[in-house]
Each structure stands twice: as C-alpha cells, then as structure tokens.
Image (tube, rainbow, N blue to C red; front, side, top):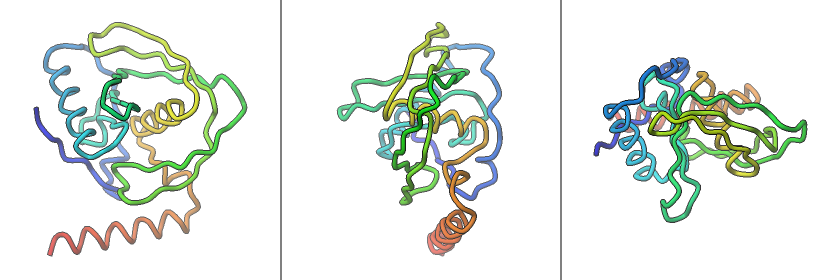
Length: 169
C-alpha cells in the first residue's frame, strides 16, 4: 500500500471538482486501499480523492476508534432529510491544525456505490452526517473554510502559507 500526498489549503487543486467514476475495478480498489492507508496514517476519519489530487468522486471514511468500520462512497449523492441543523466542530486533513464550528443539516440520506461497485443507501445523523457532507463538499471543490467569514478564512490561509514557507527552508 502507498501513503498518498494530501494537498493543503490554499492549494488551488483542492478547488477542482471530481468526475464520476465510470468503472469499479481492481486498480480503483487499490487506490481506495491507498486512501485508507493515507487517512489512517494522518489520523483522519475521512478522505476524499480530490484531497490527494485524484479528480474522481470517491471518499473513504471510518468513524470507529479501532479502524474497524471502513466505508467507501463512490459517486455519492446527498439529500437532506430535515431542515434542522447541527453544529459540529470540523477539522480537515487539508487544513491541518484548524477546527471551526459549522452548521450542517442534522440528517441526510446518501446514495453511492461501495468498493465493489454495488449501490447502497444509508441515512446518516450526527458525526456520520457531518463527515459525509464534509467529504462530498471536497468532491465539489469546496472546503470547510468556505463556510467561514472572509476574515477567518484569510487568517487560516496566511498561517498555512507561512508554515509552508518555513517547511520549504
């Protein structure tokens, strides 16, 4: 398995929209396994293909503490099931070290394909609903910082750019 490089904000490649997956084959499953390895290595709970510079509509997620519940979502489609919103503190592997509270629909339905290309549907609440929406945003070229005020977004961008410059030296 391979550990993939995670793009970090404000890298413009994070703004690219993922294209639908046409074929689920062994090469795609190997890539999915690499995504899980990368996510686990980075101590994340979700990772979208666009975060590793692969413009496909795929994300992986595992909300368990012991890495026992890996989930794959290929070509996800989300439908909010309520007008009620939940506030959750969100972080992102592409925006390391920053956490902000966001409001998102409290309950959603997601339709997708699994790692074998089989369709499935699941209703999500709580952390799972937040993660599904967060990762699907990535596939649409959006980041959680886009929901913040311009001032907060600029502060985060400047801090990360400074960190990147220091790491390059």
